[in-house]
View 1 (cartoon, helix red, strand yellow):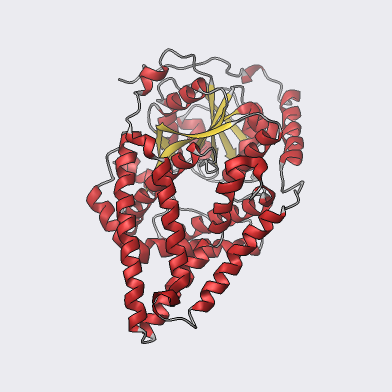
View 2 (view 1 turned 60 degrees about the vertical axis):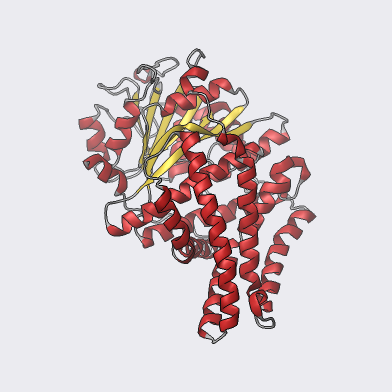
Length: 510
């Protein structure tokens, strides 16, 4: 049974009585910039340790040595690059399996745990640029939340489409001057509009943070639709854990109805499921770094303390968690980051190869940026398991797509070069790895269902088929996108690229 729908108006702003030039807002904006300048290793670089240099360089040297072996050895050992890739991935699966064992125990219902707790007020920021096609779906989901947000602020990043007409005519909002929070909607008293000059998602989020009045803040992409009790689950998580500063919700990808859309949704559904099981595992190791800004919640004072989101990073949500982790250790705060299995949402996902590669190029380039800026944390015992395990794993991940693509290229070379005996031995390794992946797929689905209660769209039969098909299709596309990310990073690229929205629009039309 869900809790009754309640509008929690505590701590909401009263923008109608505000001066257009608000000293407290300007002061907080300056405070954010000052805090970022101190907390960001991009702005104030930290010297890399010897262990960090050795870890990162050894990953590259190992690849060169393993690749060279292909020209001197016979049998499966000639494919040493691929064997190393398979061994590394299998070790990660074993780690995740071990750390995710607690999910075999069914969790208590959300209401039984939290219905008597006092929930903190939460504000939601919807960063939006030219998202008029999907905003109605996203806002409708936010407005029907049980124990919903005290504030919903649409951070309009200089939209040039029909966003203004949509917000004024359909949602009863009146625009204010740039950088000033509007009066509340005439139809929804917790809905506000904040227009800012186009400067990117991170700047729009930061502008909204400066006008929010709630203790916790949720970021929701304009192409993400929350389940009705998602904000309630997030608020309950913060109520139960005073040390919690950042939390991720469970995201389910939604693609368009075209043939390519259905194929990409099929692969991405199981990819997302495995990824969230992995996030739970790393959370248990106190090393969770990946909090998707499409659906994440933060303690507002922690955001202000570290300077908010970094506009110079391609993956501002991922980089922010590193900064929060660093700040927590430096100031001995014991902050926690976790994934909330009871909070669910659906998000628009790429449905063509071109859009998928653009997304993964940006994600990987931003990952490389963040890894480089925080290289001093890798192998650093000061940061505990995060420094000694998670970040070394991420150092290996920087080269993982190169290992994967090289292994595939060598396989093709052996196959068409008349090295039949080598190919047979290689396929024996691939067959064993496919069996391991299949077992992990089924294990992940079982745990995911118990953890989240989600059973739709995750058929065991389709998962088995995906496990067999993925190594020579979707996995190669992921590696290709990551390799493009390497080029984007080395060239200093900053552009995101335009993504076409189709998944949530299709949902809205059903």
